[in-house]
Picture 1 (cartoon, rainbow, N blue to C red):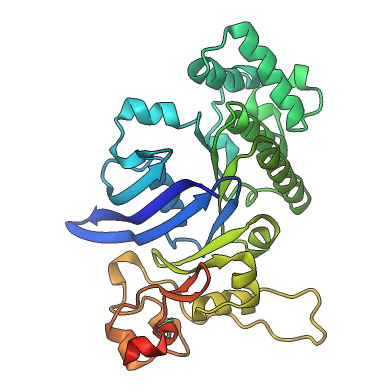
Picture 2: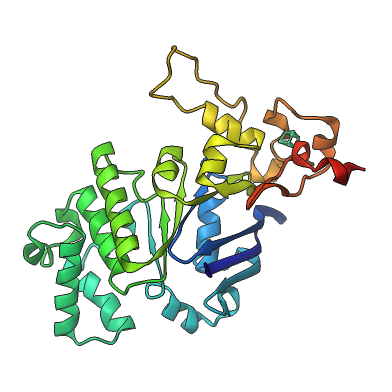
Amino acid sequence: MSNVLDVESLSVEFCVNGNDFYAVRDVSFHIKAGETFGLVGESGCGKSVTSLALVRLLSKLAKVHGNVHYSGRNLLKLSDREMRQVRGNEVSMIFQEPMTSLNPVYKIGAQISESLRLHKKLSARDAFQQALEMLRKVGIARPNEIMDEYPHQLSGGMRQRVMIAIAMVCNPNLLIADEPTTALDVTIQAQILELMRTLSSDYGTSVLLITHDLGVVAEMCDRVAVMYAGEIVEQGSVDDIFFAPNHPYTKGLLNAIPKIDAVTKERLQPIEGNVPSLSRMPKGCRFAPRCANAMEQCKTESPELFDVGEEHTSRCWLSKPKEANA
Ligand code: SF4
């Protein structure tokens, strides 16, 4: 299977009060055609900064290093004009809160049509018809009337459906969805995830799904990268991550979620401590202050990602192959 996106050694640096801090460090992953790839981690771990860096939506103050190969081009090297052609057309995005992305003073029909007029050069009439069809596909009842309404007249779930309509109307190769269901009620969450799954399968769209919710990952993803303090600490298939987790942080995340099929009332095991702030990143392994397995080496030397299986890697000294120790 060919890759739609290849991210190589992506780092994002911010300068605060004259000091440089890495919000994201040396992140590499690829997304295959048609697959859903999850980026999971706690708030502040760098997953949203990573996604914004890919599509060049970070402030100019951020220094972005590395390569982002998409369709034979390095997105980080494109001109602003070329990048605008890619964004919203070949690569589209959905964010957590649709009200921050929808324009409050434009009608829904105009907002969906705009993408088609801009990127596909359709006439106003054709764009309107396709926008209407897209609203039907995302399951909006009364689509003719909704085309003529404003975002504030819709519920949160409907607004997210409209965002999906805008994101999918140009038939993108890659959809980046950043916490698309976090702000929604549980029942609506399930409907939106099902809609994303159906549309990405119908359109053959690859998905980069950013979430803090391991339940969403289990439901939606083929492969997953777990992020902690700006780094990928483990990467593998969904089965690897859920049934054979290797990194102590991944194991901690899994132990911290309630299991509906638990036979006894086991206590949940939270991960002690907090994610370190950018300005106080520990030397060595960034997880060391919270890790029950930490050794002396962990406090001074940063582990690299070691292979622990086929397409399964873990950033932990305990995973270093024995022969490599010799
Ligand atoms: Fe824990 Fe050390 Fe592995 Fe880091 S490298 S996760 S501190 S055992």
